[in-house]
Image (cartoon, rainbow, N blue to C red; front, side):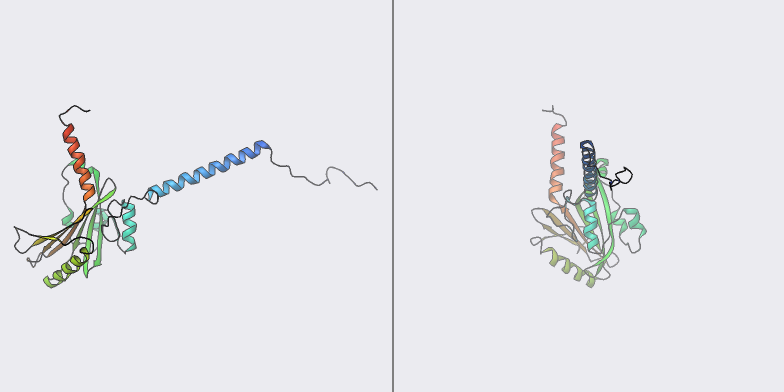
Length: 240
């Protein structure tokens, strides 16, 4: 008996993709790969992750390094339980005590536009409530200002000794400079090849005890001085 070979009952045979179909699938795959790559690079750049990290080996404060972007500095401080917020949020949060110390003007509108400031609300450090301002120039960390809250002279003296011992782990011994306007107040000035630390101590006024630390990136400051010098040289001369 001859088998029924009617087309309706014949097994279906899957056709292999044609050459045109293969090229289309390949093109779609390449487009998807390119899209994923572009999105990934954009995310890395937005968050200043490798290879867009701008941090250096020059330590600044609490895990941050000079040259870090705001994104990197936020992540570094977050690992230590600290926040980094804008000024409006800083003023809104409870516990801030030295906000007026952050209210100063830049030397020019140009400098103000080049800089951006972020603030660290109060955290506990060296047994003292501690706040800070991180100053970024062209989105790279240039300086840090740290303000310690002291409740008594004895508390202030213990704080100063703690800060000094930690700074000596990074810098050579400091130079002391007595303040000519406030008897008993003084600066301790530390410097390395890459950065500078200035500790301001005023424990002579019971109602206004102050222990403040200022950290600066020397490379950034030197670059700015060089730029200004080059501008001055071109001010009245003929460009070459």
